[in-house]
Image 1 (cartoon, rainbow, N blue to C red):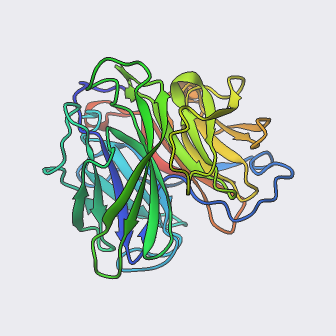
Image 2 (tube, rainbow, N blue to C red):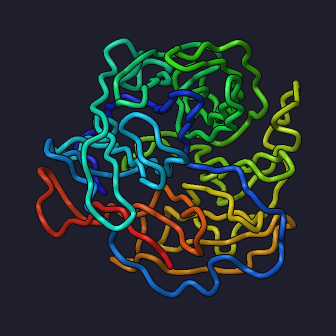
Length: 349
């Protein structure tokens, strides 16, 4: 989708309630690395529109609710909107809640008044409770233009893995200023989380401003079953691996290269399949790609062929207990969402 201007707040949103943490990546539940997860999936369908009443567009982050609490129902899908109704990048304020069989409602409208943003500041993490109310704003702790996030839910103690894109843009010019930060947080029922430790575990990732995407830098992250953190190194069409991400205390730089190029074409969203493989969606075309941890790209499925599919995909999440993947599609739409427009949650099955 084309922005009407480039200035925007850069916000990553955390939903935290009684230990519930929502990010675009998920921890794999099985280490079976045989076969392919998406290779046999041939169908897509629209689950629901993600445009709320205020007209926000450009759906980005996707997370499946793991268990019911408050207004959150197990199996529902949370989707954040990145742009407002005028399609201005980074000014969307809503998170919608989508039912697995269709229908969507507003989960939260998020104010960022206490968040240093508008691309002139490092941004923040905004913490919501199970009713969609803002409980806390987390700044500092290595947060510097948060672009995507995944979480390891440990109950009272959890870990967030955040990609940052503004290190070389707001500070001294550095084309390789993208970082990955691990935040250890504590929380309990009815309590806002507190950051108890922050460690930079990745750095040196390419990051730059972009007229169509606002910023291009390290994006999707997913935690593998062995504790390896996989990072979508978008600018280099690459998947990076940071080993021992849960426990490491040293910066691993840009990690090791799992796979680069070929079917990977500006990968954005990233998730881990039940077989431990890495799923990504491309920003450069309409493809979803499955890559094994050893680097072999084992499946490519076109999920959007509108005008080549470029720039239409971002977040994705595996549907629990099913051979299916949710993904968002934001093809089309101009100011005030003038048709043709397609801002919705879809499913590959």
